[in-house]
Amino acid sequence: GAGVSQSPSNKVTEKGKDVELRCDPISGHTALYWYRQSLGQGLEFLIYFQGNSAPDKSGLPSDRFSAERTGGSVSTLTIQRTQQEDSAVYLCASSLVAGTTTDTQYFGPGTRLTVL
Amino acid sequence: AQSVTQLDSHVSVSEGTPVLLRCNYSSSYSPSLFWYVQHPNKGLQLLLKYTSAATLVKGINGFEAEFKKSETSFHLTKPSAHMSDAAEYFCVVSDLNTDKLIFGTGTRLQVFP
Image (cartoon, rainbow over all chains, first blue to last red; front, side, top):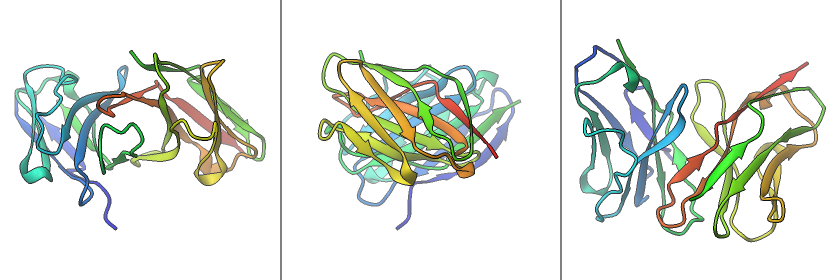
């Protein structure tokens, strides 16, 4: 079956522009996560959605970052007024059920964002 | 708070020799632990996971890891390295309440012919 997909695979933007990154989770997965992988910071959690509950935004680095998940499926991560330090690979993952500490998270291929 | 420490940033082995990638964890409760692998320009792939069942966990591609509570370790091993094993490996612990993953800094494995 289809895995987690992300688009675009690469995005180059100018400092100050807004960008939107898209994630399509595995069908039927109720939990969706965004992570960021950058040089010097490693892999860090950004935000987490579980069903219709309010998202856990505790990992978002600033108020320029936001995310939504429409209809419990597709998610969009938006970065406003991009800065050079936002350059990173943004990874999305989904799992069948969250909160069990046993469910596997399946990762998409990531979106490589470069802010010039 | 949970955390993991990967003790080596780089490991180099010859093809056919054993692989050992070290990971120590810190957790106030029995953790869920994972090893993920990331090949160049590829997504993260789960190698194996520990969820308080058997302490010796077998994963894909001949990898295994042993959970040792007394040593707070979860080292990844493979008896014989293959060239295709060259990649970045991440030791990961799962947050109890949210399942968000907390990643180690990664170990880059090089395999020489």
